[in-house]
Image: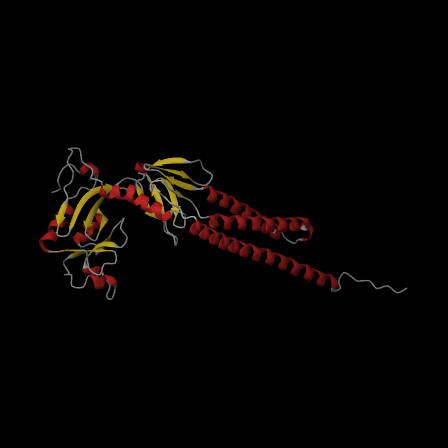
Length: 349
């Protein structure tokens, strides 16, 4: 009887190995494609359902001082679905890698599979943290629950500075007088617009209109008044740490606040422009700051070279132009302002 044997060096085992490789590659590709498409489908469905629910049952807020800010449903659902997909794929690949560990040339596939599994666990934890986080407002305080931390109450009076987050979606970052972060909120959160208005009315506006601090003698720095504008001096927490001296300027077209050092530098001619610290797009500047053909050059057209102008927002013309004796009066007032609250013992020289 004639028998045929297949030797180890023949091509069949190689063909079988190639088939297994392509099967594994196809399975992993399908898993990753599902992990990408499922969250998109779920998030689109959730957004559509939320929109329909909002149209059917509009939210009424009879008391504007009570509201809740939290992430939208689809934001944590996407992370949860991604986490589940990564956990399943990572667990499957880990089992396959561990079972065939003896045939692998390196531990790289096993490490990659475990990394996918751990990434899925992290996504699930993040989804739970996003779902749990919230900010609840009251007339004089905020109740903040961030991630897995316990709820804590933050009095509105402890918020010293509120700054926008530097990202494409917007948001706010709140700090106390020592620069410690009190809370952050993303612009995509549910109720963000109402919450931003709440903070503007109850925190930001009182800070902007608060009287200037007094010195040891009990006297405050007098205000400056000119044609179409007024200005005063105060101490504000701009970013973090101790309060800094600030010049607050008010006009009929808006308000702005300048670092005292920046305002003095512009008035001395060492700077061409000083930007407001809490009013976007507001500046104290000279015509020399405008590049030819820019919107600022158009707005400053006709302003004398030795004058200063206040540009506020998108106004086509300056809100106020300081020149002549009025400019000299304002320059003398700014140069005489105290650099610290302890120096505010009386009118500036």
